[in-house]
Length: 349
Image 1 (cartoon, helix red, strand yellow):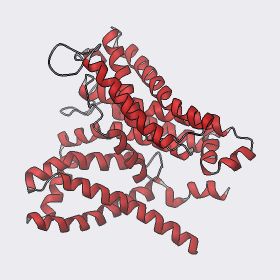
Image 2 (image 1 turned 60 degrees about the horizontal axis):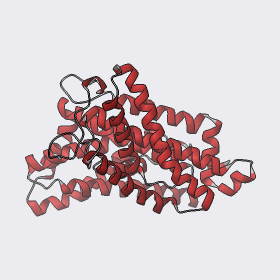
Image 3 (image 1 turned 120 degrees about the horizontal axis):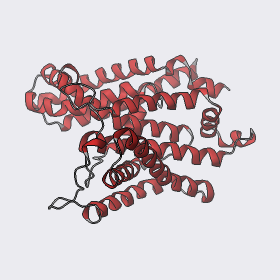
């Protein structure tokens, strides 16, 4: 029981995690500012540009929310799988499979939006669950390494989408992409004058559902116990293999929803390279949130906003946007380091 109590201690509350992220961001900014001397740039001016565009301008904040939605969904999938002891890294594949399933349904049917959206979410979730479930079944039945298998399956999914947009689903023209999805299938915009769409509402609901699942249900308890100690879970009568597969289904479905949100909310068509690496970035967001479902939202907003502000920093301060990646990496390292120091201090006391 001490292990379970450790997971829900006050230090792991969303407020404490958000505070740690802010402190880590400030420390990382202080270190990164040393790099600005190479470009003879003012760090204050650069950071003002970095954070003003995504958080202080209405239009930029809309783009921040657009980036936040898929990151949140993939981070939630990471939390479910990793908390259950299933080290899944195939969210790039789930993302594009979900986007492909949603695009196929949108181009093949003429339903109204309120009929289409539940069907699209159901189909996308089922496709992503099946894609990740295959890896879980191999792990549970044959003891395969889910990390390597899921990474390799990312390439398979990407190649499948490349085939679809270059062949059966390709629109006339020289670019490998589908036709524009019917406007009736687009997610509605929720902030006037911005590109922010209802996908962020889906991400918020998913975060709440995952929190309830892991913290308030017996299934969530069994998932966490299976992840902490499979041997103890089996001794307690928990079917660890079944919990592993269930976690994979949930994680794959959430990753596929990220693809649905992207294709219905922003791109409005399926194209080669639609993921843009968001499947791996969402894992970083989950680490920033310390695998806490409620802390995923501020972590995704911070990470997504910095991505939006990178171009503004390059334009206004003359600093390469690639420095933003260094800053983001340092923030992750600072958050992980603070967690290590906190655990070490607890051990000493």
